[in-house]
Length: 79
Image (cartoon, rainbow, N blue to C red; front, side, top):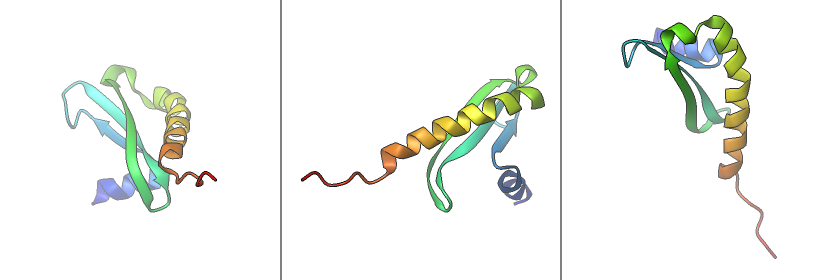
C-alpha cells in the first residue's frame, strides 16, 4: 500500500530489481484521471537507470503515453 501511495505522489512507477535482479524499470499510466487504459514502461540495467537518467526519460515516456491515449479516444462518426 505504501508503494502505491509513493507511486501516486511521484507520478510514476519505479521498480528497482523487484522483478529481476540487476534490472530497473519506470512506468507511467496511459489515460487521464481515473480513466486508465494501460501503462508504458522502460526497463534497463539498474546501473544505467539512476535518478538523472530517470529525469531524462520521464518526459519522453509521458509523451509516448499521451500519444498512445489517442488510440483509445472515441473517434467521431463519419457522415
